[in-house]
Image (tube, rainbow, N blue to C red; front, side):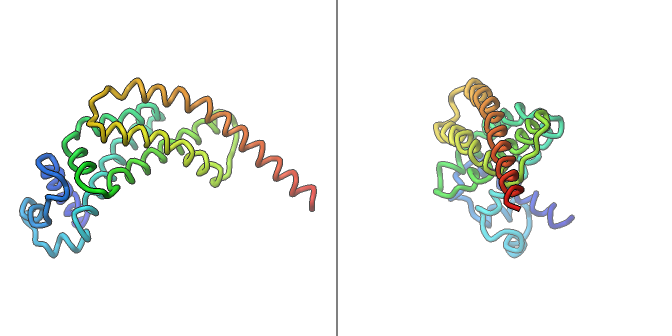
Amino acid sequence: MADIDTKKQMAEALRQLLKEKPINKITVSEITDKCQINRQSFYYHFPDVYYLAGFLFKNDLSDILSKWLETNNWQRAFYEVFNYAIQNKEMVLNTITSVDRDILKNNVYQEIEDIIRFVIKNRTAAMNITLTPEDESKIAAFYKYPVVGYTWDWMRSGMIEDPRPAVQNIISIMVPNLDRNILDLKKKEDEEAAGKKKSL
Protein backbone atom coordinates (compact mmCIF):
# COMPACT_ATOMS: atom_id res chain seq x y z
CA MET A 1 0.00 0.00 0.00
CA ALA A 2 2.85 2.35 0.86
CA ASP A 3 4.40 1.74 -2.57
CA ILE A 4 1.27 2.72 -4.49
CA ASP A 5 0.80 5.77 -2.26
CA THR A 6 4.37 6.87 -3.03
CA LYS A 7 3.79 6.35 -6.76
CA LYS A 8 0.61 8.39 -6.66
CA GLN A 9 2.34 11.12 -4.69
CA MET A 10 5.06 11.35 -7.34
CA ALA A 11 2.46 11.29 -10.11
CA GLU A 12 0.67 14.26 -8.53
CA ALA A 13 3.96 16.14 -8.29
CA LEU A 14 4.58 15.47 -11.98
CA ARG A 15 1.04 16.60 -12.81
CA GLN A 16 1.72 19.98 -11.19
CA LEU A 17 5.07 20.37 -12.93
CA LEU A 18 3.56 19.48 -16.33
CA LYS A 19 1.20 22.42 -15.96
CA GLU A 20 4.27 24.68 -15.91
CA LYS A 21 6.81 23.21 -18.34
CA PRO A 22 7.49 20.47 -20.97
CA ILE A 23 8.28 17.00 -19.72
CA ASN A 24 11.84 17.06 -21.08
CA LYS A 25 12.56 20.04 -18.83
CA ILE A 26 11.40 18.28 -15.67
CA THR A 27 14.03 16.63 -13.47
CA VAL A 28 13.81 13.82 -10.95
CA SER A 29 15.07 16.27 -8.30
CA GLU A 30 12.10 18.58 -8.88
CA ILE A 31 9.70 15.69 -8.37
CA THR A 32 11.42 14.36 -5.25
CA ASP A 33 11.65 17.86 -3.77
CA LYS A 34 7.90 18.35 -4.18
CA CYS A 35 7.23 14.96 -2.56
CA GLN A 36 9.92 15.36 0.08
CA ILE A 37 11.39 11.97 -0.73
CA ASN A 38 14.92 11.00 -1.79
CA ARG A 39 16.09 10.16 -5.31
CA GLN A 40 16.67 6.55 -4.34
CA SER A 41 12.97 6.20 -3.58
CA PHE A 42 12.09 7.58 -7.03
CA TYR A 43 14.40 5.15 -8.84
CA TYR A 44 13.09 2.27 -6.75
CA HIS A 45 9.71 2.81 -8.45
CA PHE A 46 10.52 4.28 -11.88
CA PRO A 47 13.56 4.25 -14.22
CA ASP A 48 12.93 7.86 -15.27
CA VAL A 49 10.38 10.69 -15.50
CA TYR A 50 8.81 9.23 -18.67
CA TYR A 51 7.85 6.00 -16.94
CA LEU A 52 6.26 8.05 -14.17
CA ALA A 53 4.31 9.95 -16.84
CA GLY A 54 3.10 6.63 -18.26
CA PHE A 55 1.89 5.63 -14.79
CA LEU A 56 0.12 8.99 -14.39
CA PHE A 57 -1.77 8.81 -17.69
CA LYS A 58 -2.65 5.12 -17.35
CA ASN A 59 -4.17 5.64 -13.90
CA ASP A 60 -6.03 8.79 -14.87
CA LEU A 61 -7.61 7.28 -17.97
CA SER A 62 -8.37 3.91 -16.39
CA ASP A 63 -10.09 5.50 -13.40
CA ILE A 64 -12.20 7.81 -15.58
CA LEU A 65 -13.24 5.26 -18.18
CA SER A 66 -13.96 2.33 -15.88
CA LYS A 67 -16.82 4.28 -14.27
CA TRP A 68 -18.64 4.69 -17.59
CA LEU A 69 -17.97 1.16 -18.81
CA GLU A 70 -19.30 -0.24 -15.54
CA THR A 71 -22.59 1.54 -16.26
CA ASN A 72 -22.57 0.26 -19.87
CA ASN A 73 -22.22 3.82 -21.18
CA TRP A 74 -19.42 3.27 -23.68
CA GLN A 75 -20.46 6.30 -25.77
CA ARG A 76 -19.76 8.51 -22.77
CA ALA A 77 -16.44 6.70 -22.26
CA PHE A 78 -15.31 7.87 -25.71
CA TYR A 79 -16.22 11.45 -24.85
CA GLU A 80 -14.37 11.24 -21.56
CA VAL A 81 -11.06 10.67 -23.36
CA PHE A 82 -11.52 14.08 -24.98
CA ASN A 83 -12.83 15.68 -21.79
CA TYR A 84 -9.73 14.46 -19.96
CA ALA A 85 -7.47 16.07 -22.56
CA ILE A 86 -9.38 19.37 -22.40
CA GLN A 87 -9.36 19.46 -18.60
CA ASN A 88 -5.62 18.69 -18.54
CA LYS A 89 -4.67 20.72 -21.60
CA GLU A 90 -1.36 22.13 -20.33
CA MET A 91 -0.25 18.75 -19.02
CA VAL A 92 -1.16 16.98 -22.27
CA LEU A 93 0.48 19.55 -24.54
CA ASN A 94 3.61 19.68 -22.40
CA THR A 95 3.90 15.92 -22.85
CA ILE A 96 3.14 15.44 -26.56
CA THR A 97 4.90 18.49 -28.01
CA SER A 98 8.14 18.33 -26.07
CA VAL A 99 9.54 14.89 -26.77
CA ASP A 100 9.33 12.24 -29.48
CA ARG A 101 8.19 9.51 -27.15
CA ASP A 102 4.70 8.05 -27.28
CA ILE A 103 3.96 8.00 -23.56
CA LEU A 104 0.49 9.46 -23.79
CA LYS A 105 -0.31 7.98 -27.20
CA ASN A 106 0.37 4.41 -26.04
CA ASN A 107 -1.97 4.86 -23.08
CA VAL A 108 -4.67 6.38 -25.28
CA TYR A 109 -4.30 3.42 -27.67
CA GLN A 110 -4.77 0.97 -24.82
CA GLU A 111 -7.79 2.72 -23.32
CA ILE A 112 -9.49 3.17 -26.72
CA GLU A 113 -8.90 -0.49 -27.50
CA ASP A 114 -10.43 -1.45 -24.15
CA ILE A 115 -13.52 0.65 -24.95
CA ILE A 116 -13.83 -0.98 -28.39
CA ARG A 117 -13.46 -4.45 -26.86
CA PHE A 118 -16.26 -3.53 -24.48
CA VAL A 119 -18.42 -2.39 -27.42
CA ILE A 120 -17.71 -5.65 -29.27
CA LYS A 121 -18.81 -7.70 -26.26
CA ASN A 122 -21.85 -5.47 -25.93
CA ARG A 123 -22.83 -5.92 -29.59
CA THR A 124 -22.13 -9.68 -29.73
CA ALA A 125 -24.26 -10.20 -26.61
CA ALA A 126 -27.13 -8.23 -28.19
CA MET A 127 -26.79 -10.32 -31.38
CA ASN A 128 -26.50 -13.59 -29.39
CA ILE A 129 -23.13 -14.28 -31.02
CA THR A 130 -19.86 -15.47 -29.51
CA LEU A 131 -16.55 -14.70 -31.22
CA THR A 132 -13.16 -16.16 -30.46
CA PRO A 133 -10.78 -13.87 -28.50
CA GLU A 134 -8.60 -13.75 -31.64
CA ASP A 135 -11.44 -12.36 -33.76
CA GLU A 136 -12.36 -9.85 -31.07
CA SER A 137 -8.73 -8.67 -31.14
CA LYS A 138 -8.83 -8.33 -34.94
CA ILE A 139 -11.89 -6.11 -34.82
CA ALA A 140 -10.60 -4.00 -31.92
CA ALA A 141 -7.28 -3.45 -33.71
CA PHE A 142 -9.05 -2.42 -36.91
CA TYR A 143 -11.20 0.22 -35.23
CA LYS A 144 -8.75 1.63 -32.70
CA TYR A 145 -6.37 3.13 -35.29
CA PRO A 146 -8.78 5.62 -36.92
CA VAL A 147 -10.23 6.59 -33.53
CA VAL A 148 -6.82 7.15 -31.94
CA GLY A 149 -5.57 8.79 -35.15
CA TYR A 150 -8.26 11.44 -34.93
CA THR A 151 -7.74 11.85 -31.17
CA TRP A 152 -3.98 12.29 -31.57
CA ASP A 153 -4.27 14.78 -34.45
CA TRP A 154 -6.77 16.79 -32.42
CA MET A 155 -4.45 16.86 -29.40
CA ARG A 156 -1.42 17.86 -31.43
CA SER A 157 -3.37 20.65 -33.14
CA GLY A 158 -3.89 22.29 -29.75
CA MET A 159 -7.38 20.96 -28.97
CA ILE A 160 -9.03 24.08 -30.37
CA GLU A 161 -12.02 22.56 -32.19
CA ASP A 162 -14.97 21.07 -30.33
CA PRO A 163 -14.38 17.30 -30.69
CA ARG A 164 -17.97 16.24 -29.97
CA PRO A 165 -19.28 16.30 -33.57
CA ALA A 166 -16.32 14.24 -34.78
CA VAL A 167 -16.71 11.74 -31.94
CA GLN A 168 -20.42 11.36 -32.69
CA ASN A 169 -19.58 10.82 -36.34
CA ILE A 170 -17.02 8.15 -35.44
CA ILE A 171 -19.57 6.34 -33.27
CA SER A 172 -22.35 6.56 -35.87
CA ILE A 173 -20.08 5.06 -38.54
CA MET A 174 -18.42 2.50 -36.29
CA VAL A 175 -21.44 0.72 -34.81
CA PRO A 176 -23.23 -0.38 -38.05
CA ASN A 177 -19.91 -1.43 -39.59
CA LEU A 178 -19.00 -3.22 -36.38
CA ASP A 179 -22.17 -5.29 -36.56
CA ARG A 180 -21.37 -6.30 -40.16
CA ASN A 181 -17.81 -7.24 -39.20
CA ILE A 182 -19.08 -9.35 -36.31
CA LEU A 183 -21.53 -11.19 -38.57
CA ASP A 184 -18.88 -11.75 -41.26
CA LEU A 185 -16.36 -13.12 -38.77
CA LYS A 186 -18.97 -15.35 -37.14
CA LYS A 187 -19.94 -16.72 -40.56
CA LYS A 188 -16.28 -17.40 -41.33
CA GLU A 189 -15.81 -19.13 -37.96
CA ASP A 190 -18.87 -21.32 -38.59
CA GLU A 191 -17.69 -22.23 -42.09
CA GLU A 192 -14.23 -23.15 -40.81
CA ALA A 193 -15.75 -25.25 -38.01
CA ALA A 194 -18.03 -27.02 -40.49
CA GLY A 195 -15.06 -27.69 -42.79
CA LYS A 196 -13.07 -29.25 -39.96
CA LYS A 197 -16.05 -31.38 -38.96
CA LYS A 198 -16.40 -32.73 -42.51
CA SER A 199 -12.73 -33.63 -42.71
CA LEU A 200 -12.95 -35.81 -39.58
